[in-house]
Length: 276
Image (tube, rainbow, N blue to C red; front, side, top):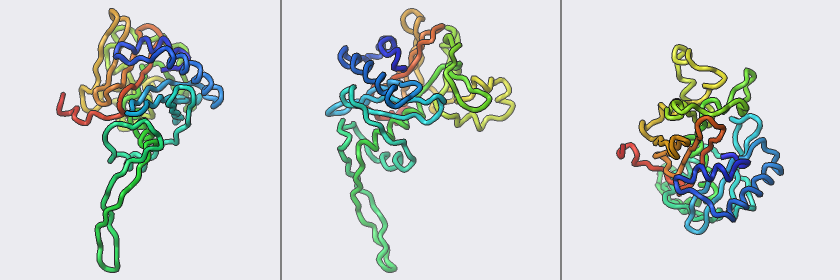
């Protein structure tokens, strides 16, 4: 959700019980404006909150003028002091995949994981137990990246792609109609397309290259991983992810108000295919 309309956005997303106290909201509103100024971002999004056992991580993201360029991620424990996180790598995701359970809420906390490594001694090969230390900050980077790639979404038409390549905010976007807002085809993944590149020219024939340049939610696997509900007498559409419980997307049809927020433990629902 955009930091500039933070109070209204939090109000619209509050139907899922994901709210913040008045002191936290006031701190966020001020500190995110300072983040935008100091880091010279085009836009700053309040991404959400990852719940820890000791304290919670408040997450924000900075966007450049090209909206699909890699986003800079920051975290805070008190909503006033923000620290920049390093970009996620495949090595980080593979390394942290072995860590299960809740976050502690301390970035310097280290998880211990025992793994078997092959050791060569002359012609003989032995398997030796090695204890690997994994920092919680690395796990935080990895989880945010996974959630972004899987469930960060945006309504169709909110961004447009120029013929020269960069993607910008569509200033003429006035919201989806009520009938469009109820369809999964009206929502895209807020990242570089993956599935779109595999489509045939015939499948792309009906697509508008300036608007339909991202992957639609309708083909997400497993099928049924999104819940769409109309709230407030059809004045608000809410999408909730069942794959990453805690991710809520909201949009008020026929208005420019939309956004998403994640408030959860940072744990993926890996049992979802068996629950559907």
